[in-house]
Image (cartoon, rainbow, N blue to C red; front, side, top):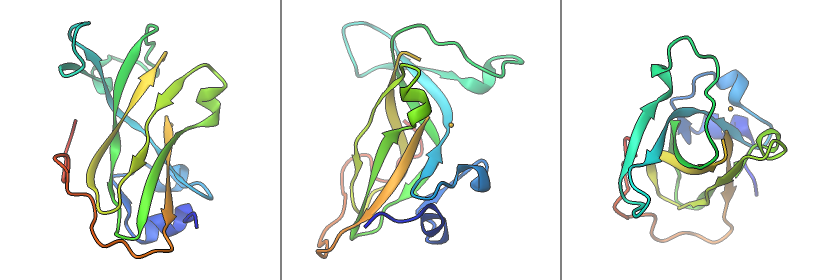
Length: 148
């Protein structure tokens, strides 16, 4: 079962929204860009260089050259046991040639989110409740992340 955007907010599954009224959709919560990161070297995907969107003086838009970027979202999540999150591209971006590669956010994960942005409100977070009880949630190295 997919949770409504209002249910997600009522349960505090996503926090740090810039505009809860504007970001809440019937079935999802829109995720917004905090900053984007680029690769420092072509030979590795382990080292990124951060560029804060807020550092672009007077810009209402940021023009990105064709390439691959890692986007850090403003919002943080708290996925309860018995649920999972899914990050999907907004259809308006997809129609304009932007590809967002993201995936499932595991049951039990708490912290910051990011997604790969290729060629360029960015993505949406959808929560699904599971019918079977989850015994153990996410316990990986990114648990509690406060940034990428």
